[in-house]
Image 1 (tube, rainbow, N blue to C red):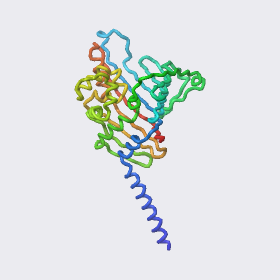
Image 2 (cartoon, rainbow, N blue to C red; image 1 turned 90 degrees about the horizontal axis):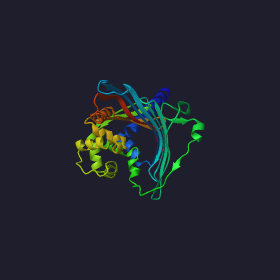
Image 3 (cartoon, rainbow, N blue to C red; image 1 turned 90 degrees about the vertical axis):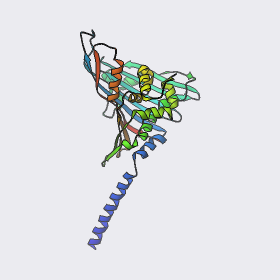
Amino acid sequence: MKKAVVLIFFLAIVLSSCSSDNANKGESLNDYLKLFKNANSFEYNLIKEEAVFNEINEEKLDRDIPTTGSVNSYVNSTFVRKPYYKSSLSISKNTFNNSTIFQKNVEEFNGDIFEPSRFFPSDIKASDFSIDSKGTITLNKEYENAIEMKKESIEGMPKVLQKVNDPFLLIVSLMEQNLDSFQIEKNEFEIVFSGHIKPETLVDYYINDGNEIFNILYFNYGGDMTLDALKNETIKNWHNALLNPLNIVLLTNQPTPVTLTVNIENSTYDIMIDITEARNEFYKAVYADVQGFSSKVEKSTMVYKNIIIKE
């Protein structure tokens, strides 16, 4: 009888283990990307961190410029696809000019009328906010209560803006086109998919599915749809083109590393994009004509942190 009990107990453990393994095996990267494509509402934090080293020849460049510094930003957002709604709090820290800037935005459509509400960029003191390890911003209550939003009503705003501002539309499409580059690692706490996106796949996206978005970011562009041509156009009109920060990958011929992490315990997601190589190419192009000055990016990453898919 004891042997039978032990055997049943052993089989229960084995079957439970197999069931767990099969559940994990059924959740491929493509399955998770479909979640992002089909969802309507998200909450997330976006953390951008960039560390830069400047090389300065003082004989050729008579300016007082710090040799090292960082530009880091933290954004807390809610995004809804239908009906379109986007709200965000952001804080940017720039050690080069010792500035810390706060901004708040809310965007939505009322029929065909675009209605943004904004608290325009303003200096903020360290005592007025805190940021935790997940990039979540907490404002001092007195400061938060003093925020006054300015609302506008804009007619004729193209509704493709909704796709331009979609935080996951482009990155998910690019990951789908580069599925064969991703490897999986998993443990009891998380599943990690690590791979890369090739810049050529971004060109393909703009030729096909993302043509409407391309026409907004590259207004009146009539050149060739090749990587070299779009690289030159991105550098030429970077103020507009880089409204979508992922366009930076057009500036490098190297694949851009991407990691999707599934946090099993709390059902949240992180997406990390390492754009160090691309940002180096950007600075190289921007400062090409500046004598005695060059910038070296030591690290530049974009991390969509603590993503919650709400519906």
